[in-house]
Image (cartoon, rainbow, N blue to C red; front, top):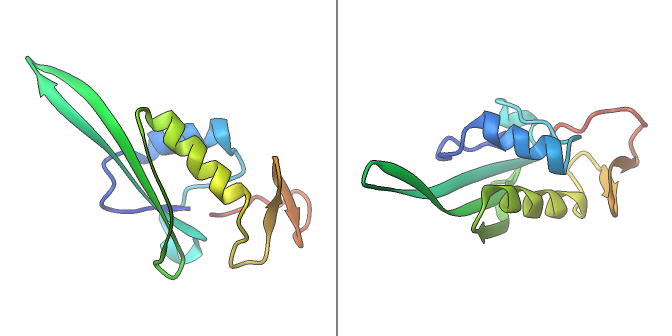
Length: 117
């Protein structure tokens, strides 16, 4: 998966969420290698010098640039969980698909190959 340049969530924060919810999914800077492009944005406000995180809006695009999934949640960790659930249940352009409920196990792909989304 590649992170869209319009995202205001850092790659480190996105990868942290991926490591917890779908550790087989890898962030890449090369969008040509990615099955999905993620636009991850969090609304935030500053009140009396304190930054407050608002709602998280995540949009997932396929490699053709089509919006295939979006979610808006109170917390970023829930948005990334939603994204992972979507990826888990949808085939990739490489022909692999996660088996339901078991990230990292692929149909039509050899065992032990990391998925580069």
